Length: 121
Image 1 (cartoon, rainbow, N blue to C red):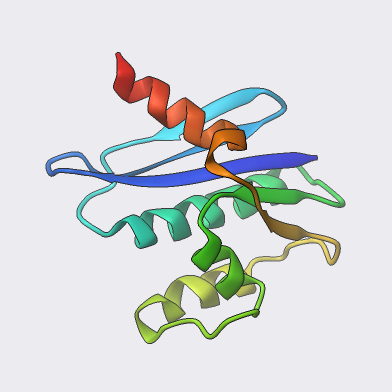
Image 2: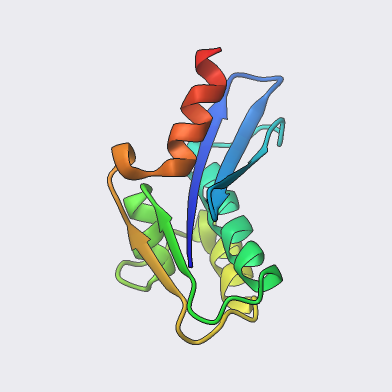
C-alpha cells in the first residue's frame, strides 16, 4: 500500500503541519508549533511510518516530495546533525523489512495536494 506524506511550515501561531493520504483518506495535523519546513517533512515521514505500522502493512511504500529527507532516510546522503534525532526516531520504528521510502514530484503527491487545498479555502 502507498502512503503519501508531506510537511509544511506556515507563519506562527500555526507553525508546522503535515498531511498523509492512505487508501484515498487524508489525515491532516496542524498547529504543530515552531520549526522549519525540513522538520515538518521529517514529522510527516515519521507519521507515515507510524501509520504503516498501525495498519499492519507488510510492504508499505512511503511517498513524499522532500528529496533531501528521503535521501537521508534511505542512507543515500549524510543526515545533518540537526536532523539526527528524527532519523534515529524513524530507524527505531518496527517497520516491515520491505518498507520503501520513495520520492515523487510535488504534482503527484496526494498529501501535498491535500495541504494545498486546505490553504486555498
